[in-house]
Length: 141
Image (cartoon, rainbow, N blue to C red; front, side, top):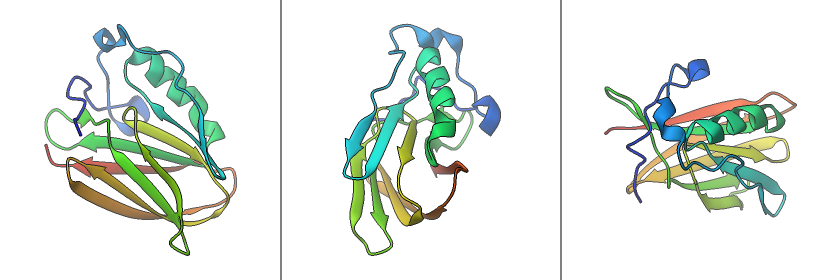
């Protein structure tokens, strides 16, 4: 897996920013995918795609963000993401196409594993209602 070193962290809402020069060559509309009951989209590479992900976010109850800590913070892509329900059944198993992954799934308790360069981070989330739950995964540089 490779990290997206050419993307600097600090999205205004999360305190992370991306240089405008990254917009060149970026795709404008990330593709919505389906795995079982979960629909998801990942991306955020380049300014256009980043803006598209921000627009899509309110329609998804789960938002994942992948970054490295340090100065400067940087976005990370190609993160192996696996989400399991409360019974341990895998409901999503994918590779992120950018530093953001948005997912629509039934309400419930989920365990999220995010693997970047062999370092796995885990978080538990309770998805409920229309509120977007934002989970940030941070790795050392």
